Image (cartoon, rainbow, N blue to C red; front, top):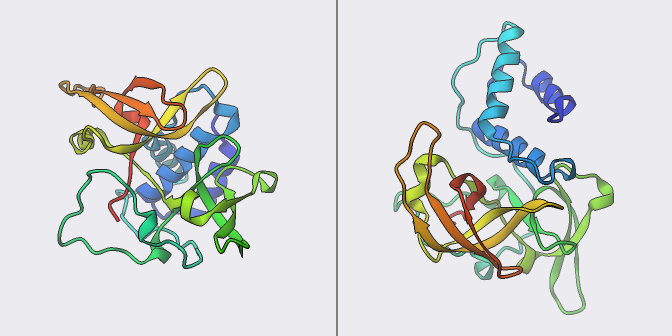
Amino acid sequence: MIRIEKMEKVLMEAGQNPLNQDTCQKLARSFSRSAGRAGKPVVKWRQIQSWFQDKQQELGAKVPSLAIVPKESIDLPNALDSNNQPEGSFERPKDEKIPDLSELEFEARSSKDGAWYDVAVFLTHRVLSSGELEVRVRFVGFGAEEDEWVNVKKAVRERSIPLEPSECQMVKIGDLVLCFQERKDQAIYYDARVLEIQRKLHDIRGCRCLFLVRYDHDSTEERVRLRRLCRRPTY
């Protein structure tokens, strides 16, 4: 069962206001990455959206279409520089403005398993004797006991973006992507490179293309569907 208590809390806070797509995606990724769902299918953001819409209708709330609003502000020390730029061939439209860092959300790589998790909050920071900056992060969906110190330059970056079926053409051979690796004992996100793409016609189920990826952390290869991929932001 998806964490109904957490969703009901969000529902109470939202009231009659519609939940934006970004919030639904954030909740979906949080549930998908939780330890209790290891090995289970990825929770889709549209499932989260439908649940909230049904509940709001039951409460007599008016549910308009999802609005696009700025992301929640997350405070991050001024340490993200040009050396932390994401890789990949996704291009940003020329007229698109680069947002201020305060409008962005981040993900961090855990030293425990090498996987990437969404950052809920940056708790504090410290400067090592080497001059490198570290931040203590709390991951989305995890408690204080899972807080970690991570290197800002090497293990903190802007949050990867789940791909919609209509966006499969954005993925190119050689791109760096974040891929949901499903194993018997775990199901978490790792960096991977796209090696080969088998383009197929989409149907009622959405994108049917297959992507051959090689994971950076163990060099294993796997063919996956688009639903398991997240693209790197263009900024």
